[in-house]
Image 1 (tube, rainbow, N blue to C red):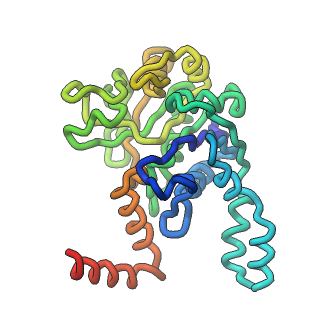
Image 2: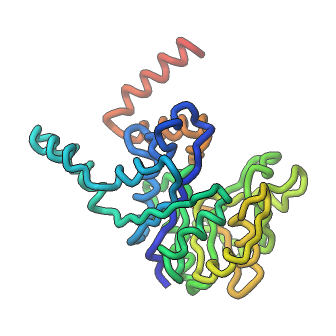
Image 3: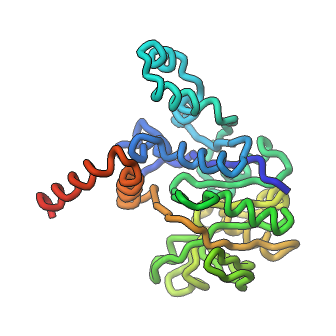
Amino acid sequence: MRVRKAVIPAAGLGTRFLPATKAVPKELLPIVDVPTIQLVVEEALAAGIEEIVLVTGRGKSAIEDHFDVSYELEETLAKRQKRELYEQVAAISRRVRLISVRQKEPLGLGHAVAVAHQAVGDEPVAVLLGDDLIDCEGLPQGGIGQLCSVFERLGGEAGVVALTEVPAGEEHLYGVVAGDVVVDSDEQRLLRLSQLVEKPAPGTAPSQLAILGRYVLPASIWPILERTAPGKGGEIQLTDALRTLAAQGDGCYGLRLRGVRHDAGDRLGYLGANLAYALKRPELRPGLVALMRDLIDRYG
């Protein structure tokens, strides 16, 4: 079964980036000159996703505006014959069919996904978190595209989540999993999951494999989310719902993604993402390399 819809939770307050996020949604903080959430949306579109359901909260209307038509700006760019900029701006609204729903209370990631149920309907759904950027340049598929392929290959009834190995001692910061290896090759590592724990206490994690912010979930996740009680931190945790999914039916799998992950929800990770994406751009790379050397000489 093909995945046609994606949910992007964007209701968080972005407290790690204050004071910048006092008035600007963290999802619109740029990676060079492209908002973080636009990179995530483009990843979904490249995987064949047709509709984006944005889960927002108060003060996030600027995200919707970013993906809407901007008549005044587009007309001004056209009049000034800035064709390249015009095409960049106009393409944002042309490519995306976006629906916005409100998460009125911050009750956890599981709750944020459940809020999108009515907009998605009773069908499979991809979930992408904006804090994780997956750079798959040069690879045939992006992050969520890799998960969609496995989901379809498994028959469309099992969940598939992205995994990464985290340093020892940092497991308590993530949802951590363990399971049996199904495929282990240079191209792919796939596990059938048997244990899923949200932010385990130090020293109790079942492995160093943590869930990344990419999921493809079958339609059976919706009634599970409805029944999932508040867990860690008093919130409805998506990891808890996945544990139920893993124990029934076709189960839940974890895939080690190909590509480079940047944690754009962390200040150092965000700075690293900016540098990495800027270094890939031929018009910026020489000047940036020279600037970095100068700054290291001056401040290093």
